[in-house]
Image: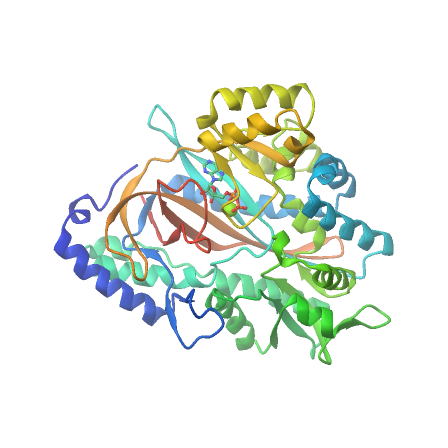
Length: 474
Ligand code: ADP
Ligand code: MG
């Protein structure tokens, strides 16, 4: 891939000066996080980690990612309404994976009672890497779709300005003027506002369901503040608040602290550690309610890695979206090789292949949030151990994407300034709203570029591995 900053990246004096400007610009622009030491207060904050330089992204692949986002919105929404597909696809997984099984149980409970919810809101982020072929070509390959709590749409709405300034400081004014504006927080808020409006109660609020430890609160505030600008009231509550104070009335309207809730926007709830018995009960209460959940439990299940793997099977997309052959082709073009480890011959074969050549694959459990996947020697050891046990079924295998690294500086508070070989992951935010059977909104809402040093196989920004970036299209 092109290396547009070859001349400055090794100029130590220029880099040092630009980095000082960059950090202050990030603080001024609000690219912020609470600190690890004081995660419960905004008295002490620091800048969220980011790259000194924007990273080169092939324009054609960037456009391809945007062009396929409405298709993925449609696909996720379609799966969320297909009980048979979810049931069949997750049948083997829920036998061995307790977390997915509990989510699935809530899904079945809610269906049995009958849905009170009539308006549906999806906010997702489809993530990609740029796979570099031996012939020098690059291809857009999907890593995963996040259907719950997809983050950094807020902070990244502010990074392009920072990078524009940095390029100006480095004398790259033409390049600076080419950085694209990007405002996912506006797009996400638009979707939430639409769902709120269709819910149809002026006095009802939007509830952000937030974590116990809220280091990334500023990212969420960006979206929140867009809603306040539209005169939509926002409250922030945790699962335990819902357990203690949440209730449903006769028509399953959700109330908390005397306020009716129109929309529940989950920024929590995707890892097993979140849930004790009380929090599971709170989740069930929310799912049973008439409030618009973003996402509802079915849409969360549609984002599991097992579903992703099944989608890659020939014929599956065609069956799910029989009237959309072009959308199917666009989506399939972004799929990497994905393999089931279910018991049987197919699973035995691919397990043996991965044990023999672990560098070709990534081993993924049904988890979100970074840091759970296995690579290389560790992949081989784990697979060797579980290859003849049902536990194997809780994982999937995926072809490892191998992007071309580029030099950059990862700016992190309290860390020395040093050049790193880096690779990037592009995410496109998708937003859609469905009322009954009709999709009334379906949009791409902006992008997120995250970059990490190549020595880290896994992990996102929140996990402390990747940093925020801005695409520079080449
Ligand atoms: P999570 O739900 O934990 O975010 P992901 O599937 O996004 O799981 O994987 C986490 C990280 O691992 C990604 O951000 C990416 O850096 C790396 N990764 C995942 N899949 C692949 C792959 N097929 N090839 C190369 N790296 C991958
Ligand atoms: Mg991910």
